[in-house]
Length: 320
Ligand code: KDG
Image 1 (cartoon, helix red, strand yellow):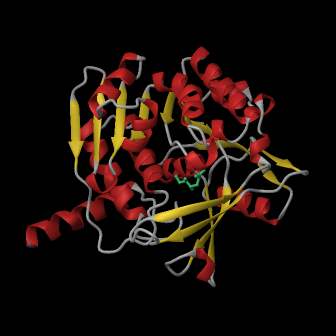
Image 2 (cartoon, rainbow, N blue to C red):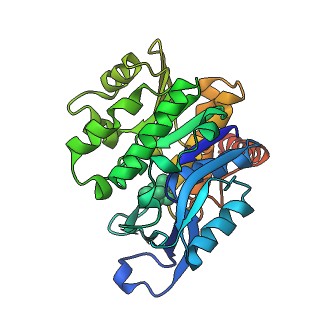
Image 3 (cartoon, protein in one colour):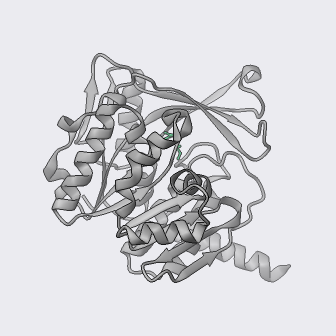
């Protein structure tokens, strides 16, 4: 594999109409999860990527496996747990904040929450170019946290790059200091993705640039702060700053998954040898595309689609 990851892949039930879920009559079925979203994005860009996870021995588990296989993600390290269900979550759209989405999880005790160090195959991690981790998996259970810690140690011991997205989900952690303590070690990863809310939890009271410089001092070589509609800013190991604005799209369907598409394209661009400025531009374009549809991965682009999108935006600006 070029890239491997570990995390929960769930069935997503996305509200077809905007507004509070209690009034929604129809839901659309998707498959998603931050780590698998990133792996799928990388496959679309020509890389080989695989995920370590567990699904239930149920219809949704079969759906998750079929979907991952269909997207050509390696599922050789996916296990089926006969005694726990596949996780599910719902998405409420455009309410109470138009343009934003809210996630409701039904994943407590899921098959993936039972991942443990025994599910980590050292060779699978050691033979990949990079291990991609997020702050979600360590929040799922103690055994998940131990599994992610093991994967991280295996990568480090074998000179495999680690790429980390802080992705702090307070609905899972419930307690900021637990999140801060559990995630601290991953901040020395080669590339760290984060956002302003997460930095506020990890480095309370610090400015974005101070927090980024603290992450760099832990050993990271590239910190990327995603700013949503404001684009993104990156800091390299010398604290040079790179900034790019976001692309405007005519409609927002569902913003969930945009950050993962951003990560996949940024990672793919850097590993392809592109500059940080160009990687940021491409990554922002991917994020913009993903918000235009429901589902996290369906609008993740290939290189060609990225170029078509960016070119169309350039033309639109020239015509203005
Ligand atoms: O990044 C998008 C994910 O947050 C979403 O797909 C669900 O993985 C998910 C999570 O744990 O929140």
